[in-house]
Image 1 (cartoon, rainbow, N blue to C red):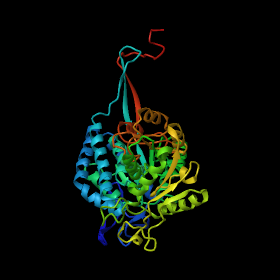
Image 2: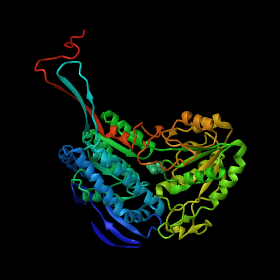
Image 3: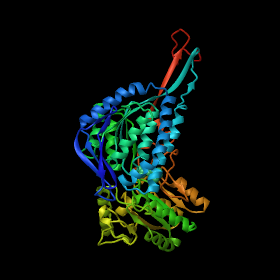
Image 4: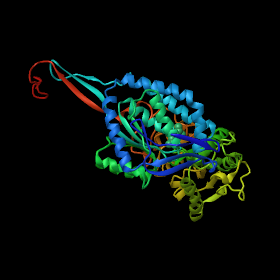
Length: 516
Ligand code: UN1
């Protein structure tokens, strides 16, 4: 690592971290502050297939030792990590604001999720229970043990650059696995620092190997392809449904059960009896927090017909008051820039979908520029890519109703009654998060049991899952694997059944029981 001065602090020259060594290999890439493109943050290489092979071999080597380290000792490393993350929280928070353009409040929350995850799993190291199982035979005992799977390939997104990797890395290493991690090219510094903090906490070098690079036609794609060389026993991915399906196919032919956390088009329902102040605020935050760049962001707000006009008026008032800008200089903004150009381009495209499908634009005017000024913008809009908060009136079946956009935009959709609300809420391909605002207990119940989603809030937002509840979706939002809480342990271990024979004779199950 080399440091040199840049606009808002140092820029770093980073290498991959393989077996504890820094390796400079591959074509140069760079990361700039998305709020201000003049601020270079890092230069880093694009790992090749060979870089990845080396990393996988180092991981295999480290696995042999690490998997034999007692689980409570592995847990102790995570306890140390929690303390170190707590110590570094202000630095990581600021770095996150600069590297991916989150607000300070949200960046601190991102780091806190990792701290909570580390605390949770630190003591799981003392609770990695197996079972004792009665045998059919005399003088014989049966047991189950959790065993680590081996080397895990991981690809993560840049919108939660510490929290989401922590959901994967922490349980993977707690259960004794080793990892090759390809983080998002949008957060190289945070990823590098995160691995260094694991090592400071006592994680032996080589247990987590970091290889930088892009996704398609780059390091991410090659990492997936290496499943075909038998280098991984597990694969974990957070990203788009399209890429997730392909990873699932490659994993499937290699008999690997992947963890796939994919897209969402999360519905938020507001019923006629709802507390409207609460619902307006919750809907606004669900749609525009992180500039809509969360897999849990609300994409469609389904509003009950009798209150539709009233909700629309109050919601638009709230949206118009949204402050946007460079969060590093103006901490009061609700959201900052697009994390990258690809997300901006997709968001911009949905304005065209709206035109084609006849959706009504209620608020929003594309990219914020000097010629297209947004009244509550702070900073120089052309230093990065910033989008107007956008609200459409749309109908089910429209492209923008069906597809995840991952930017500051939301659709208002009129529904009539709870049954229609549930039907419409279920009519996208996705099933990640969901929410309903109502004080009617039976409607809340009907929604809770009728919605096809991995997560549901009653009178709260679609975003903001807690670190010890199972996170994941159904339908196109994932393959059923869960992250967070004890449930994730199933994803990183297999059950090993062991029998111990004390009789000194050949006893055979089913045949020698003497009961038949
Ligand atoms: C994501 O966007 O991939 O529930 C994860 C939330 C956050 C995590 C989002 N705790 O909104």
